Image (cartoon, rainbow, N blue to C red; front, side, top):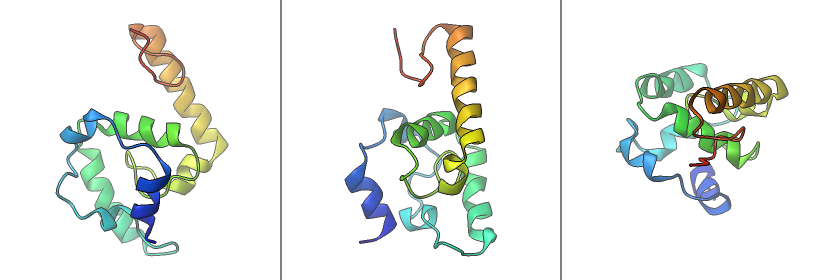
Length: 112
């Protein structure tokens, strides 16, 4: 079973935001680089993420799925998402966003 298939089986599908992702049409395998592979493939994928209008939604999805979600999501790797400091920073940003616009809670879910 490949990493992409594993991600689809274990986790809920991304939300409707995914239709607007820059990566639509890019082979899924590119977002699931081999462990220990060169950083060039990750850098290449992040070029899509850096210009994507739904990057925040994508990262929110990945963070809500937890540390077992593999692949590049929202421009981040599984290793990045597993680090407690990064998770804390994401939660703080989501909390600040919710405070500023009143549309989400700390976990980034809509409360409207």
